[in-house]
Image (cartoon, rainbow, N blue to C red; front, side, top):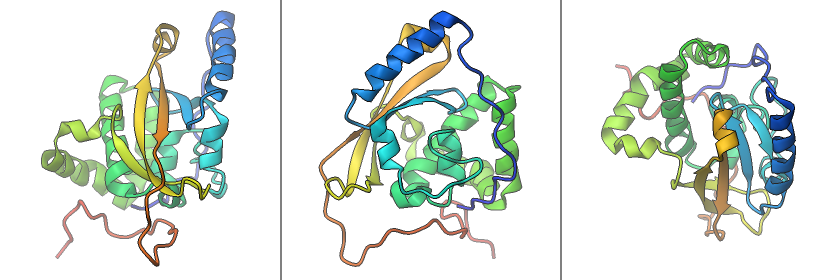
Length: 219
């Protein structure tokens, strides 16, 4: 998929509305840092409110980007960062398309949200990403079923920079609490599995701005 978006900084993220909510997040951050697997708290825009050390370690080698860093907005990272495919294996089918499906549902639910509309504009400005959203996503959902877009329980491949993990799989576990739910937030944890063998000659790769495989080739 293409990754041309990035000319504007994302809409600033609102903080917790009350001191009590802020105090809760501060304590929740302490809890999150005790989790050994990559874990983060995001709102409905996928703005990252909290992320633990294991999450930062997973993405420690990605290059700086003005609008698509994983610790700022995870959706923007998956869609627009050129290094995303070096960490998130099977990037298009396992990460991009499920995230686009989730984004499409949130646009329906929060149609006037300025943050979501900013992401939608960036998708529209990228011809390949727009093709994925308008053509590839419906085609993919018809082929694999709506359940493939669900995050909770999904097993997805990734490449960890720590060779003890290497190329492996993670199970996504999505949770919330009463207070997080009141903030329209969820916690996403990537439960890592043991490293699996990598075919000989396989190398890390940057995502290329090439034709989208789920969209039919033009004649």
